[in-house]
Length: 129
Image (tube, rainbow, N blue to C red; front, side, top):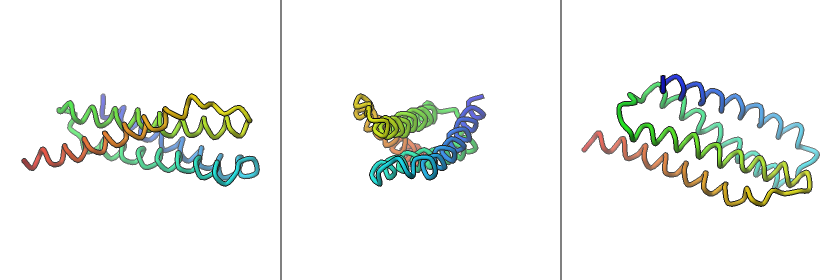
């Protein structure tokens, strides 16, 4: 069940990254500054990278180790907090009412993504030792 959920959520995040990327490239092109577009694109890129990773891990994990569950949770939570807080910051800034409370959420998402990658590296090394 967890395998299918991981694959489904990875595919969903990938689909949304395509939609958000198109939205940023077309709908925001005339409304956003270059800096805002670059920030929005960063959110889309990180979302797509981690969507792909989730789909791949869904096919490769055995889900017999708590570390694997933590990796998935870090990637899911980190992607949501990182990318979606950037989207909120950019869109609210364009609307003239920047949601500053989202500012501290972005680095928390980045930290979760980093922890997910560190745990993934650990899982590889743990099999060698």
